[in-house]
Length: 130
Ligand SMILES: Nc1ccn([C@H]2C[C@H](O)[C@@H](COP(=O)(O)OP(=O)(O)OP(=O)(O)O)O2)c(=O)n1
Image 1 (cartoon, rainbow, N blue to C red):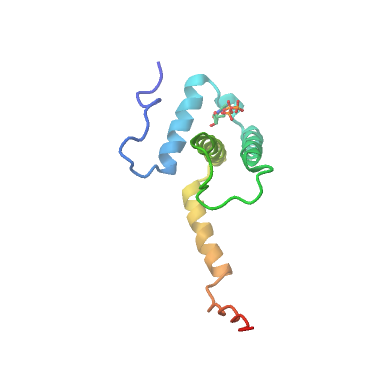
Image 2: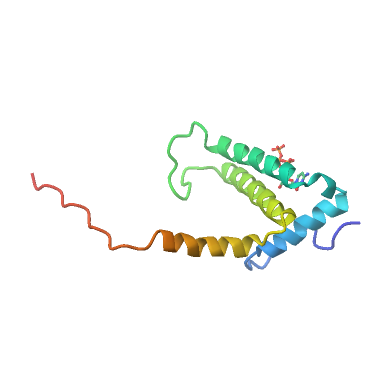
């Protein structure tokens, strides 16, 4: 039983679409009979729980440099997993709400751009020679 691609990874490095993730998640839930539990509220609570697990990774670490230069590969793998859990629940939440998350996000980016137009940046003040 199970889908032909259930355990396959994206081996050719092509972009993964939100639609593919949505479809795979829908099948994952459907073949396990978990649809009944995947109400919007339950998925939201699961999402918030995973955001908590994601936060724990950064808890007490102080500021973290971009690119995580000093992190072990185990720590980075853990971060990948928790980020994925958040994304996967977010995609499922949008799906059971009947929303197109990709289109909604694109629309929101356009809206953000008109709310925050690019302005000419004032260069930083020169430092005093003495
Ligand atoms: N009813 C469920 C249960 C799990 N998942 C999927 C979405 C998440 O990607 C992952 C979450 O699984 P766990 O609840 O086992 O959480 P973790 O993977 O974070 O495990 P743990 O909390 O033990 O670290 O599984 C799902 O879609 N629907």
